[in-house]
Image (cartoon, rainbow, N blue to C red; front, side, top):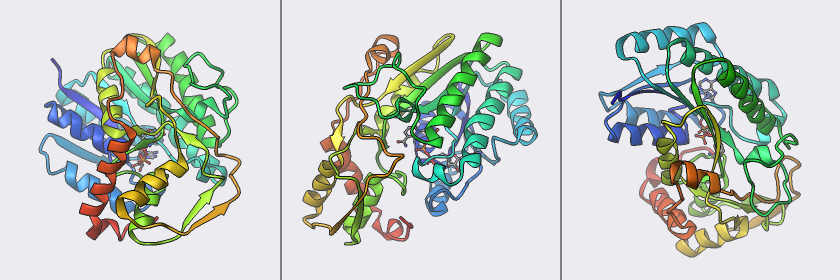
Length: 328
Ligand SMILES: NC(=O)c1ccc[n+]([C@@H]2O[C@H](COP(=O)([O-])OP(=O)(O)OC[C@H]3O[C@@H](n4cnc5c(N)ncnc54)[C@H](O)[C@@H]3O)[C@@H](O)[C@H]2O)c1
């Protein structure tokens, strides 16, 4: 079996864990990232320094929206190794920031995605896995979001850019000999998480004894999904044929207030919480219907929220020396 893979977004939260998993499975990896500063770059550098200690991991700092630079990297790796799989986890992330800077989101998330697909096809790579998001469902009133649901009413530029990438890949798959799998992730959390997301912000604010700015009532729910479950879902999707969209979510939405209550219980410290008005980009609720995911790749999340958030909290305590310096 060919064990070569190109992964983009490797300095990011999910790209880092995906790379670790594929290295453990014996893969040789070409890892790509532009190391942008959408959040504190120190944590991205930390993740990369960890990955490059493995001889089977090669890192290239490149922007996926730059077709010719990306092509040079693909040529070099593909002529030596003929990979059969590309995993595109590079993207401008963060729902709220996409309002003030839409262009950079479309450049990375749409043009960048197209460049990856074109090069994967050019170098005869059989399978492309592309990360999408629960945000494409907008403010859906449904109890659980099905992949057949309407997704053309996004609430943010981020969500619109991700929906655009799904649509462009649909046409691309019809026109080219490549299998494409879109994975819609639901609020992913865990160790080495994103400093712009609530689990990281709440845990660090709690351990630093800072106040917490809470947008909305805190009764909004998110389908928090543990990173190890997400990575297993990515791995299990690697051989799917044609064009597929799958939800990867925990299927058990949790109130933001409950996230904070858990953290305060672990540390025995209560934060001062400043309640602010809900933001227009934030939806009330997310929850994944995973019936198709179960039937196609036999994937179900195994990490209960209480266990996943405890593991994440413990990791923050153990790594406090460098984590306390990360800007949140
Ligand atoms: N974390 C979540 O909860 C979540 C939920 C839904 C979807 N997703 C999607 O999963 C993927 C990974 O997300 P993440 O949480 O790891 O985010 P992240 O921001 O930690 O990682 C994304 C990485 O991509 C890199 N990147 C951005 N634009 C790039 C470009 N033009 N060229 C090269 N590299 C670029 C960034 O530097 C970053 O390291 C993204 O596509 C994201 O939209 C994440």
